[in-house]
Length: 198
Image (spheres, rainbow, N blue to C red):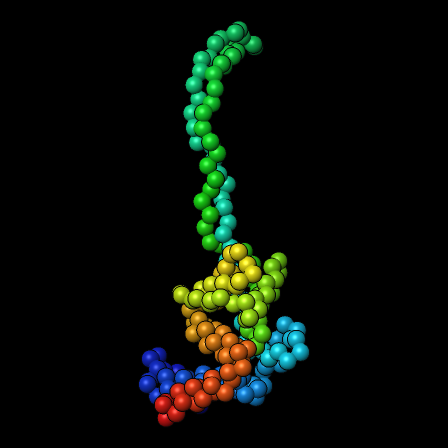
């Protein structure tokens, strides 16, 4: 029988950490039974490290701008038409068009896949691929990941949510270790962490 604890005990927390580390060890050793499942077609020698669905791609959108300025001149009456006064305006307008300020907005939703060679996003209108060999940085905060790649002018921003932020960060670090041929070192660190938990 399963029981629900509103506040997990330290032992529950240790068990969750053990499960988390064991899942990373399974991926690193190639014994993860779900590694073959997913929406991304893998290249030769490529290994799936993790996959998340319902990830939002964030882009900068600009709202409609407006005209800002003034006009100077004189309005001269020139007659009437149907009982209404008709006027002719002489003058000029000064001002400029003010572009709306860009702000981050979800522009697509899709699947994020981390492999031993790349990080991909597959959405309904956008498909992005980030080769790990060209990855300059992967920063995260508040459930948002920013991926900077050397062959792109602008970084890619993805929102995964705070509940899976640590999960994704660990998968990206493991993917980088696998890509660099440092799987043995990553495994040694994971096993040491597991031993510390007891």
